[in-house]
Image (cartoon, rainbow, N blue to C red; front, side, top):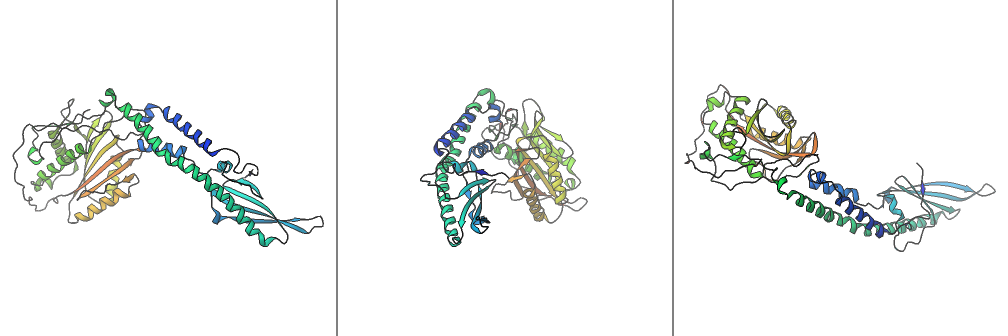
Length: 425
């Protein structure tokens, strides 16, 4: 690798403060010119992280503990070794260009300086008989270089520390202004409403305020933001599914004969009996053998699936199958696992382990369901597109066995004229 000689350029080429001002100006210009579609369709945190990484400056930092030395004898006219040429190779991290930044009271070095890749090479001529003083000379020169680099890092640190606030303010301000337009806001809802006369009303909580869709984090793509369910809307769907399963446990002989398909159909009746959309009487439609989906265009905003537990491998395969569907950004994935056996706790632990070990796993909230798991996953076809997976594990009666119904809860009077709760798209 060729080496770049720095003898006359070391800490003397450019004013670091002027260079930092120019870098900040370029950042401002780039943010101001950022395409609106890119701005709206990229997750804000990812976009902020990108610009911070792109415009952050990393001045050199010597890895002094890894330095190496090479020697070569120089002969006089009579062929005797008159001096030693000593090369000190010091690896460094950071941008080599900043070795040229003017650094306070830099007085220069007595050795030759060059850059080769990510190594700073200092060359000294050590006269014969002066070997004992060589180490002190080298330490003194390297100490001066490190002192100059420390001065540069201090100048750059203030700039780097300001990047996050600058980028975050500009991006969030522009996004807020764009998303405030009425025409765009009207495209973000899911018009799914709670029926006022739902047959499962006796198992549902008191009337709630109307829910409005919340803007999801946008991801990279050419389209406008996609609809998403709020957490309250998601909890309403989960609650309806849990209530329907509770009703089913009162008929264990029937429950024991079902597999995923009839169970899916039954839960579809429960969901469509509780929720409505203006343009269709059937908001949740069958998808595949065991799932129900709430569609918006070609995307699925909510996907609920039934699975009778076999083993961890089968669970993982089913999860991969569900993630392959055209899920919308910030989609809600609900996986209902039914366990026919005595080791319910082991199944719950297996589910939690599988979710966290999945390659698409991103994070999990601190509060986890008592009989399940909740995690955020990144979709395989688009790492910037995330889904929230809620897995709930239920005990199911064994097929062809003597089963008894659980203790029934007291009936509650149905509550008429419940407030409609909806997703406005």
